[in-house]
Length: 216
Image (cartoon, rainbow, N blue to C red; front, side, top):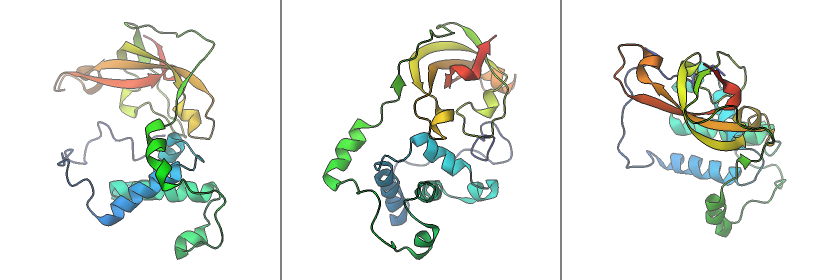
């Protein structure tokens, strides 16, 4: 969706400021928001794409006003309510009204669960439409749901530099469909193709699913 999160190349928001690696967190609450998000993700009730889409659906003004971990907290609260694991009243009070529907992931299994992750590679019956070296254009479209095709790349031409195989399609995964998969490519764009002759040169790479692309 063309939400406030998709800001690549937009003017008026100032420079991107590099932060030092440490401290990793700027407050104890950020550690808790991070841990809570991972722990709730371990319940297996939603995908990473659903979690991303939950953050993106905020009103733009709220999204732009939030800090990084406030986005995470908003996302996990949204998913907990939408999946029926927590009620709005429980969120408001901070107290559970009864026993949880799903047992929590035991602490001793957290590290192994994080190591395993979630496999996103799938087998699909159709051959890839593009090969390494193919010239492709990102389709111009404006979805109302989640997409991993950045707005600033739509309509622009790039070159396929890698084929990752077929992966779960993020756009449908964000709505709860974790089976649909398409071929996924790494595409290189010359900077002046995206930003015009005043660009600083170089190239930009993005992993893009086949439905986003057309021959150029």
